[in-house]
Length: 488
Image 1: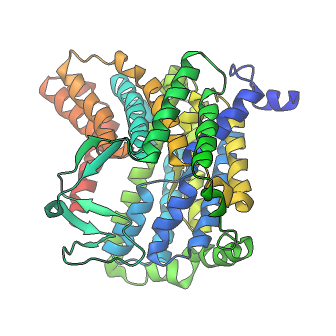
Image 2: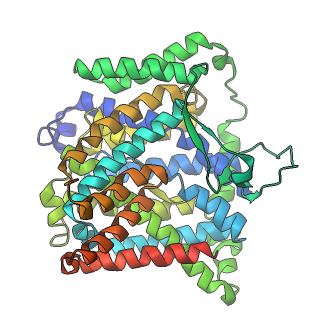
Image 3: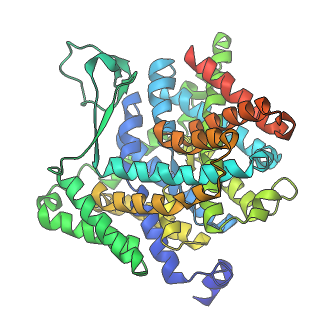
């Protein structure tokens, strides 16, 4: 135990083994949905469901273990939500690439991100972000996490008028169609979703509300492990109310042998004749391939940067000096964390999944007291154990993890107080870098909007010279990306 404490510098990080274990478990339960959601999205491209399931577990577990051991930070990695949807609905369905070709592009994206990281470009980008926007991103991550929790808890319902629906499952909406093979998995709308509070006739909403109350009371009373206790309590309550969930566990469908057989289909598929060879066989598609890789890379980079700044600075995991000196040395904790993150994307592509990125839900473990890489190691071990106990992990309902996301989000929003809201030139980009992040359901979109409006407001107020050249360049790249994507 003492060796573990010394390796992870627990005393220096003001933590202890028990707290790190609780934090690691809390992070895992908060993000465990990805091991079921990711296969359900990617399998629509023709990828074998259980193969993607194992690919998700291996990619997440290895990447999370690596960042914990190498960088000694409490973050977890897994295939990113949004990036997996882009992989399926835009790259495969919209642009017509095969899933093997898409995996090849994800692998190249990972290599590009490694080069950007080791050549200090990524670190310089972080250094270029103004302090006010750093605080806005931090608070925005909190608002985003809380919003994810509210949606998962079914505390907010949305109504969409049929006239505003543009596509279902990546296909053009047909009002006369009444059945969809495999059910409805994704709806895109041009606008008009009207939010409303739940009527509380839904069991998930009721359980989540109870979970919020329990977690808040425990947090206010400063009970150690409050978040994990809340997750366990609501899971137990859910099983007491609906014991039939125990009998719904299907061990046959999650058989280890069949899953490994299907993993053989996805593993290394990026390097097969249907992957790299096919991707570059038609040179007329090369511009489209480059643009797609660029879109993958841009979203991946800024999702991670936003998460690190958002959760790390607010909790002291990364000091102000870490961020301020990030382009002067390559040996800071933040620099190691950035490198640890980029390993995941190419690794995920090899196993057979979309971009692996640092999860905002890591904030749940951080909120539970996680401050070292031991938190990540515990989370990684949970991913590996899911190879054998996956059916039981599914017993943890969204109602149990949603309160944790909401409470952690609330705690992170304290960064709003550091922003000069009286200065409209700062307030406008800060709004887009924070609140818009949740509205657009994307960390990178929020950062992009914040950067662009910062360049605009600083220019019109005569402070263009204060804008870091990198910020100009990144904002221009975001604009180019949005213009190109509009025509894809």
